[in-house]
Image (tube, rainbow, N blue to C red):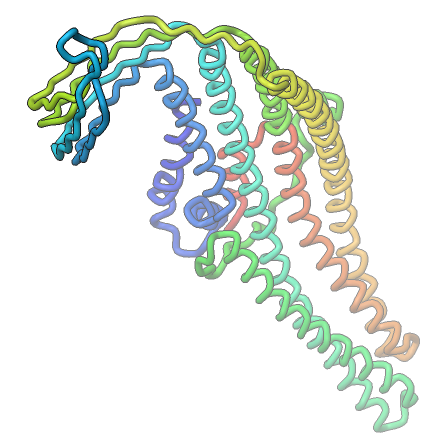
Length: 458
C-alpha cells in the first residue's frame, strides 16, 4: 500500500503521454480526463492520503515529547500585619510590618516525557496500518467504479449518436413511403386511411428524432460531468466487426468464488472487522497502567519581592527533576466499561457489514455473468433479426408496389428493421459494459481491460 499513490496519481500523466497523438476522443482519453477531474475519485485519493498520516501520528506519540514553557510578569506585592511573635526574647509580641514592592519576574521550564509503556498507543500502530490498507482498497474500488462509469457513459453517448442516425434514416424512409402513398392517393389507388396512417407514422418518427437529439445532449452532459466538467468532442465509434465473446472462464461458480474473496469492498470489510477487533483491545487497554519517564528543568528569577516580611531582590531558583510516572486507572465513572461495550457493538456491526458486502458482491457478479451470457446470445439473435427484418422489408415493399401489401404493413416492416438495428447496436455496448461490471464485481478489473475495449474503437 505504500506505493499506491504512484500509480494512482501518476497514471493520468502516463495516459496523457500515450494519448497525446490521438485526434478524436477515444475511451482512454475520456478516462484520463476523469482521473484528473472526477470529484468522487479525487475524494477517494485524498482519503487515502489522509489515511497515510495515521501511522506517523501513531509513531509520534511513542517518541520523546519535548516542550518549553516560559512566563514573564510584573508583580505587585503588599504585606501588613504583626510578624515574628515569640520568635525572640527581645520581641515577645513580634513586630508590625507594612511593606509594598513592585518587581519583574521571569521563568521557564524545559520538560521531556517518554512513553515507557502504553498499550493503547502500541495498538494504535496496528490500527494505523489497517486504516492505510483499507483506504487503499477503497481508492482502488473508486478507480474501478470510475472505469465502469466512464465506459458506461461513453457507450451511452455512442448509443445516443446511433439513435439520431437511426431516427433520421427511419424518418427519411417514412417520408418516402408517405410521398409514394400521396401519389397513389392522388390517382385513387389507395384509401385516405393509408395516407393518414403514413402521416401518423411520420409524426411519430419526427417526435422520436427530437427525443434522440435531446438524448445526445444529455449523454454528452453526463459524460462531461463524469470527467469534471471537461469538454467532450467527437467520440470514436465501436468497430462494426466487433463481436463480443463469453467471459473467461465461462463458469459462474468461479466468478462467485472470486467475488466473495477478491472483491475490493469485501476485502475492505474484512479489514474493518480487524480494525474493530483492535478497537476492542484498545478499549480493554484503558484498564492497563501507563508508565512514562519524565525529566524537567525549571528556572525562576524575580527582581524583588517580600518573603516572611523581609524585602528581597535578585531572587533566583532552579529545579531539576528526573523520574518515572505511573498512572493506574482505578475508577473512571464507568467510561472504560462503556467503551468496551461500544467497541464490541462496533465489531458486530463490522461483521454484519462484511457479510452484506460479500452477499452484494455475489449478487452483482451473478447478475453481471447472466447479463454477459444473455447479452452475447442476444447480439447473435439481433444480428439474425437484422437480416430477417431487412428481407421482410424488401418483400413487403415489393408487395406494396404491386398492391398486395398496404402501406401500414410496409411501415411496420420499416420500423421493425430499424428497431432491430437499434437493439443490435445497444446490445453490443451492453455486452462490453456487463463484462467490465463482472470483472469489477470479482475484483479483477484492470487498466488493461480498458485498453482492450479502447482497441475495439475506430
